[in-house]
Image (tube, rainbow, N blue to C red; front, top):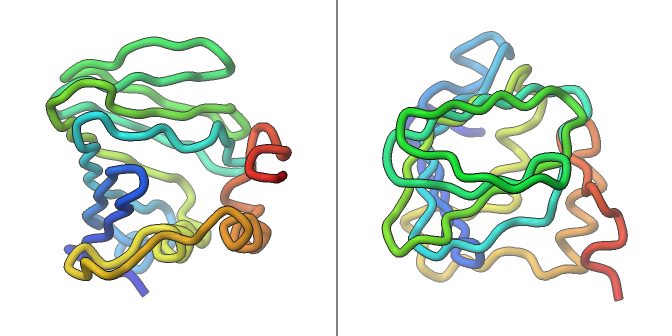
Length: 155
């Protein structure tokens, strides 16, 4: 169970999360994380959140985002709100880190999803799940996240 201040890291994408507000803090209304995208981070597969809105505010650096197939940059001070069901992905193509405040509303089981795909930031031995296991895990979080192209990751 995530607590405010906990940090998670996914070495395969170069993405770090620090919980600012948890579902317990907000009565389930939202989860808020500070997200750091390392330089030259990798985009996750395009995905959507069927019943959740996401809000992003870039605090530092720049991100590339693809929303419903259209790509653009988000720079420091810019915000992006994604309605439920909007296909998207984002990454940091530059050499400098990008820092973002990211809210997911309502929280649902988002924290558990993060914990399944990101490991403790202080555990250098943790490795993200491989493709077959990731697809199994995703099947348990369909209220929170779905692949925009369900064929991604299958061979």
